[in-house]
Amino acid sequence: MQISDNIKSAAFMTLAMAGFAINDAFMKLIFDEMGLYQSTLLRGLVATVLLGGLTYRQGGFADIRKSLSWLVLARVVGEVGGTIFFLLALFYVSFADVSAILQVLPLMVTLVAAVALRETLTLARMIAIFIGLVGVLIIIRPGSDGFSPYFIVALGAVFFLVVRDIATRMMKEEISSELVAFLTSLGVTIMGAVGMVFEDWQPVTVYNFSMLSLAAVAILFGYLFSVLAFRQGEVGFVAPFIYSYLVFAIILGIVMFSEYPDRYNILGSVIVVGAGIYSFLREGKAN
Image (cartoon, rainbow, N blue to C red):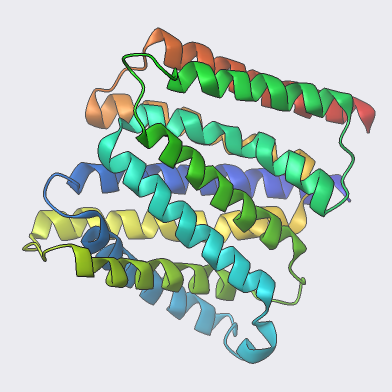
């Protein structure tokens, strides 16, 4: 693997995490006025139309039948499942707490990649995974007054996102990245439409639609760049850059919601991020 591919993938992943964090912040902003599924549906319609236009322009629909595979389906299912669990947790738990719990994702992706993709799992990686899980336990504090059952829901999102990322890495290179992002967005949008069975339709104001449109543009970048990141770079190199989400999430949480992380959140986040950085540095020395 050429270092240039890894560097590009790291940049793509950082941009993807910025897109996901901005999307999540705008979604959280309108949850008081609009239900989870309605907001997901409307955001998805805008994002899917934009991605459809981009895919058509890049010729991604030309061989759509040849491009469809169980890996593409697995990625879509992973994204849909991750979206359901994450937004459900975000609906009931603070933006900062859910964002921090999500930081276990790079460690889990690294572990699964070692098994499914036969990437080397060194002692350093195993130590980093264990330390990262300790950090997550500090964040969610089982049994404490601050614990919420929706923290477990957030961990469910991690499971589905691992499926998404591993499936992305295993896809054939000839499959259009734009098409994969489009199908992902379409799957999430359909999920929102199905979920409307359980919600009452709320009036859509200019403000709400504006926020959803901004979220749609942000999620577009998140979908596309996350696909590009795992298709080019090595999982062990790219995964730690998922931690950049935490930086964006904390900043947005402070600026948009005045949510300041408590000492446990900060300690757990530092441990989780430190574990990922440790794994990354040891990986670099090994290579």
